[in-house]
Amino acid sequence: MNAPVLLAISSTEFLIGITLLSIIAFIFGIPIYLVFGIWALGYHVGFDSFPLINMSQNHYGVLQSFSFTAIPLFILVGDLIREAGIAKNLVEFTRELIGWIPGVTGNTAVGTAGIFSAITGSNAATTASVGTALYEPLCEEGYENDYAAATIASGGVLGAIIPPSILLIIYGAAFGVSIVDLFIAGVIPGLGMLFVLLGVNTVIAYRNDYGVTEDFGIDYQQLLVKTWHAKVGLGTIVLLLGGIFLGLFTPSESAAVAVVYILVAAIGSRQITSIDSIVRACYSSILLIGIILPMVVTSILIQQSLSDLGLQEAISNAIISLGHPVLIILVMTVIMLLAGSVLDATPNLLLTAPILAGAAASLGWSPVAWGIIFMMGASIGFITPPYGLNLYIISGIADIDYIKVAKAAKWHWAGLVTVWLGVMIWYTVVGGG
Image (cartoon, rainbow, N blue to C red; front, side):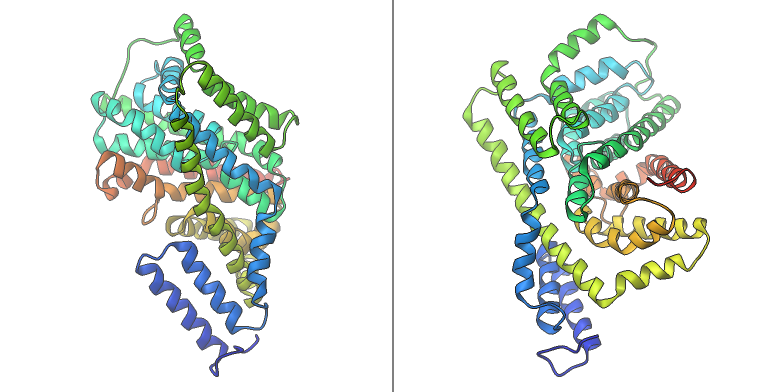
């Protein structure tokens, strides 16, 4: 290891110093991307592994990737959907489709989360939208407040897996993996997570008499009516996923087409009636992209520094040395759950995924398979304390203590972990290609 260039102290002491400084900055509420930036700047100044100019070159090189243009466009799609008031129509469509299953509004919330995930690609946007639309109806239907909030938070997890996922776009762009292949690979695991959440809610609702209905079956006439009313939102899904999977558009082009479609359809149907709504949607998207992209570039700088220290290789080799696939999977599962519970999704993805990539490869998992497996674990972190972003979002909307929501989500959490482990076993036994 190279000695610090500017300080007459050992490399270990210098590294501990900048790490402690970063931890203190985090404790005092400095935004995480600035905390990462402080650490990366300290490493570049104190060690001669990278010239300082690497920081600006890294920023330029990362953001030059065409794939990253999809992120602001997908965010804008979600914001336009919100401004157009399309959420209500999607909720009514979902209720008509699966609302006859015991646990009426709970299953509607989970199903609506699945649909929103296929539009916004964001767990946070999905949780906020579904929570705003369905938390009060859940309580009115007899659901306990904390369980209602937990169901919505758990449904929001789907936004990280069901394509088009913004996090899968970041993974593909950062590590040179086909985003289309990631989207295709995410379909079945995403649906598996959706169905297990529906199953968990149905069982709990039936046992506790939450929204149990005696009207079994679908009213197809009403379903057609609700489908027509939800045509803008459903049409967006068809454009986004159909265009990508049929090879008509790249993810970026598909998102751009979807933005144009929503604008034309929502204005034509008078769901957007003023330029102010469009401006608000664009403004919200700009604010969010201003958080995500600095996080991406600073996380990659941290990743490069950790690689230079040999930390990634050391951890990966230590895990591989366990020898047996079951032990390797067990240790990787614990690390992914711990990382997902304390880190925001983007830095977790860009820092932890490369550290465990060597161990994943030893199990025969391809980069695509590893991307899906890692993101499933990271998404479960959204309902895992102490961080649990979805838990914070819904606790704010519902004005419920965060810990109460986390406790109420335990069975949803267990169901999602079961699906996740099943996917890992499948890729290990059948093949990770």
